[in-house]
Image (tube, rainbow, N blue to C red; front, side, top):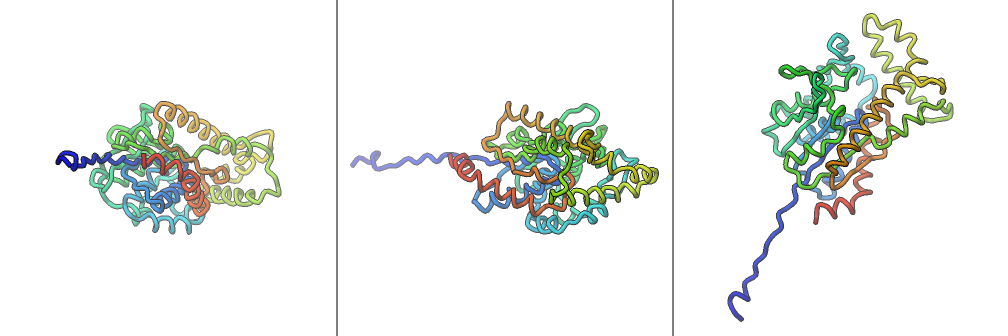
Length: 323
């Protein structure tokens, strides 16, 4: 046998860089916890994370190394605790200033700059002055999260240099392009708002008195009312809130129906448009139509569905990352 025939040249294929693009969705964002936990359980290595709003928060917690502890905390989170974290700042451009909430998150997010994190990370915010998306890829991790979660009207905007930053979901609900810019060659994207438009249309109908979820929804309205009751000058509004807020008359949608419906439609259209131009290799859409925007105390349900959607798409995920 000739020497050159006995030599074997093995060319190893360069490993794909797996990125995770975590979308916004307020309370439904807890589903990201289950998604990450299940991906890890199935042996998927996450090399890059980009996040919008709740996605930025959960992504930051994961990179900090406290995802399991955070999952336990949010599963024990009650509505009255959310009210305590809601430091009212109506004069600061939002109902909640966010300072107490950030303090509560201190144990789960490292006090570090993004550029010093063990894996690449980026968060999306929106410049309130220009309407442009802002990719936050350096600076303090906690400030990036606070900017990305600043839902207009609920959280006060964040002053960054000469700009005011609000929730990134206004311009980029599922940040696939940012994930690629951070180095990902394969992107697993998580869209939390796939069922939201359909659910909102259903809620415009007269509620079913036998619906087991209706008392649950009413309890959240009570919590929201208690929060507003603390704001001087809004006491009269609070007392007249019920019918105008929730719109139990099927002929006229309530204020919350209108606001949430408009938000869902906007984010759904933006997500579809952006993904048409830059589709992810895998798109996960958890079934979260039964979880409202502010139902932060339903973390266990959201986390379980996050795990379930990864399991349902396991063949596609494995096929993409092992190509």
